[in-house]
Length: 155
Image 1 (tube, rainbow, N blue to C red):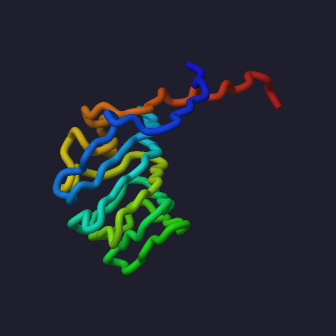
Image 2 (cartoon, helix red, strand yellow):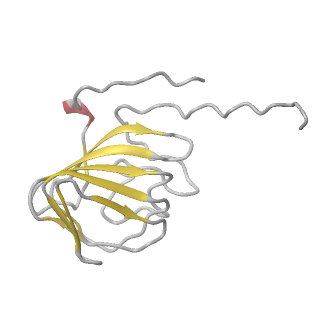
């Protein structure tokens, strides 16, 4: 099935999911490939909110800081407005804390986690590696792109 262009002029008030045990971090998923778990989301993180434990991702994680200041306590990196962060698949990091209110654009190129982290529930987490996507409803989700056709012509 062919994917159509999508415009989301502003996140809907109904589409936000609050991450439990985070101090109020909210996630708005703009797009998610239901097959691979790749996704693009906006994180709204109030001052003092945090991911309380060290953790690993099952794919590469990319973040762009739109506003605010967000610190990865281990390894000691702080994202400030305009900063870009990349964490490779399987690399442990965290805990994290918002030094001020933050808006972060977060992108995964595959499933989010190897297993359900303690700070998420099955309704708030993205796709788990080797498993199905959680039961949470996601805003702006889309079907994955159709596979390109291969030519039967011999070279």
